[in-house]
Image 1: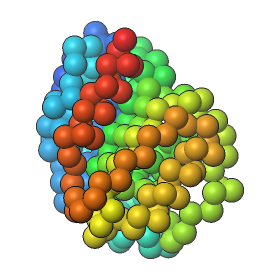
Image 2 (image 1 turned 120 degrees about the vertical axis):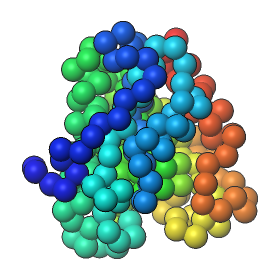
Image 3 (image 1 turned 90 degrees about the vertical axis):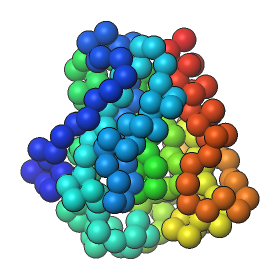
Length: 212
């Protein structure tokens, strides 16, 4: 498709792709930028890891809440999923195996990264969905079929996040368990909408495992 997010810049950092052993695709949140999520990536960067971050047109992947009916967030949602897929493809075309590609998203980006992996099930290096969940008015677990082959999945969120209902976090975890993911759900009491050191430590461990 030629949607609103196609043709946007792919920001790169970390180890150059041509000499990288693994890659992380970072998906920014609403109102943020690819460069801002790359800064988070640099906090967990280790030698050998390329950082790739697609940029949303207008800094927003889709207009409404991720809990809105899917059609209300088109074409942004589908265009965003393609942008994530194109970034993964950039990594694999750079000779990084897909099973060494980690996807990390925060907020709206976590929703998009989760949806991408769930709808393109295969082995990845990992998924870190920080303060987000699967997209749609409801989650029909029967829609998510396939096998992600024990891909490590970190689902981190506050129990009182103003944007992410706890029930949706649990449904997202259940969906990835159904897809044969190795899921680590971490719920933080009273955190609000953000990322904490425990999550960054978990992502760093995931990166070390992928590079190991």
